[in-house]
Amino acid sequence: MELTPGLAATLADAVYGVREQQNVRRAVARQIGSPDVLEDAFDVSGAAVAGMSGGRLLGAKSGFGMVLHGRGPLEGHVAIVTRGTETQQDWLSNANVAYETGPGGFPVHAGFCRLYASMKEDVAAALRRRNPSHIHVVGHSLGGAVANLFACQYTLENRGDVHLYTFGAPRPGHGAFSRFLTSELGAERHRRVFCGADPVPMVPTWPFMHAPMETPGLRSPHGGSLMSIEAHRIPSYRNALDGYSWREMQAAQGETPFNDTFEYWIGQAMNPSFGMMSAGLLWALGRALRALFRVLSVGLVLVGIPTLTALDRLATLAFGAARRSGEMEQNLLQVVAGFARFLGYAAVDGVNLSAALLSHVFTAVFDVLARLARGAIDRPA
Image (cartoon, rainbow, N blue to C red; front, top):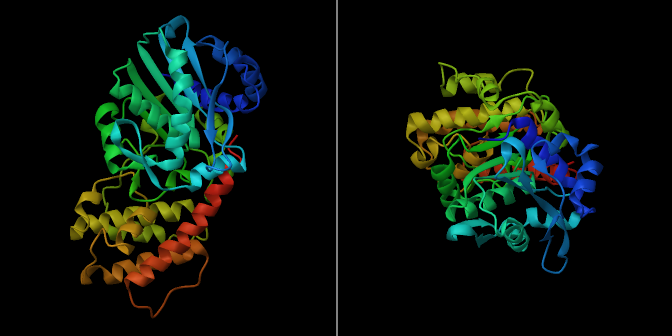
């Protein structure tokens, strides 16, 4: 039995109240107006789970999560809910993209791993002498990344039937970590919800990866046509998902066009309505590069991973993970022109394709998206 999209998103919203209020009932009331919306499913009495975020010199302890025990139809279930960031100190965890060894020995984002490690003891204490049948791990933004690590831990420990729900989460770890979660949870027990206009799920870029790897995730219908900070906020996700079932969300994703070719997708990218900061333009460029890689057998390991974005595929070309060929040159120049439009530049004419050009374009696009993601993560709720 899994949580509905609405209940999972409400939990991901409610947990933001624990940053300054350790009493969970009061924290939930402060954040979403009333604990009543959760009390049919979970006992909201108890204290928040503390965590340490930020750099080594600026680390600050604050409420980062809550562990709720199910009631009624969810008797025997547990929800581990972790929050995103609201302060500059918290953002330092997101800025640190070094690796550390996470649960299972997998390489994961260092900042996310340190926050997870600082919360483990409190979470374990809340589960002590409990034998849950189901563990629901929920989080938005940074909280979604940390939720991936807890889901990995409890999957390895065989502590009940683990389900993972994330909203607007950044990528938590390297491919080995994502492959493990994909093999253990699959798409049925891992609901990764993102918005095409939300910059946060696009970072960190390759070789960090999302799970489940066999699907692109579930696109939320909110966000508008331009990349934005507003698209990342958890109330935006919660309002958009209200009343949906997971089956309905899956059905709303749409099908891949029959003509899934480079020519089709680069044509879509040239849509006159797509311009500077267009989410649709980035989506189309990502599909165009995927189609090009497939036809020319470039970066075969990466071709079939639908979670990779336009920026990820550009990174593999710029940094040599995918080998370019002469056949690709004109196609890639069209892609470069598409990225130039995204950045608001004039048409790119008379340039020669090179690793330096691809690296320059990657850096320019990444800087824009990373700056927007930082702003989004600093005001997630």
